[in-house]
Length: 111
Image (cartoon, rainbow, N blue to C red; front, side, top):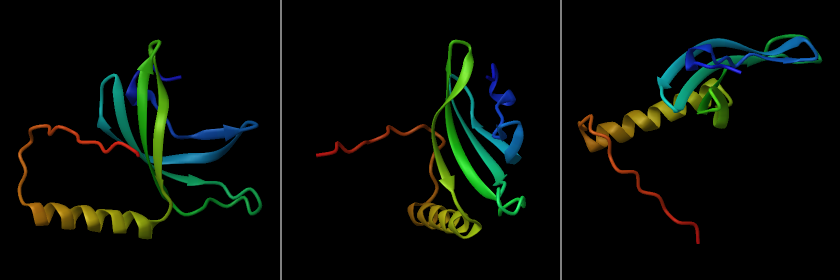
C-alpha cells in the first residue's frame, strides 16, 4: 500500500508475474481524495504479448495512512480516448472561457 500518491502504481502481478504494466502516470489531484490517470498495457496470457495501450482514471482515498482505490473508469482503446478528448474540446469551445473557480457540483437523484 502506498503512503503517498506519488508511490501509487498501476502495475499488477498475478502469481508473481507482471500482467498489467504501467507505462505513464499523471496525478490530476492530490489530497485525501486523489485522482490519477494511468496509461497501461495488459498481458495476453495466451500469446504472452502485451496488448494495446489503455487508459484508466482512478480515484484513491487516503485511509489509515495509505491510499486505497475507490473507483475507476477505464478507456479501452485509443479510438475511445480520442472520442472523449474530442467531445470535451467541443463542449468547452461551445461554452466559452471559464473561470478557475470551483463550481458547485449538481447531481441528479435516481428515481
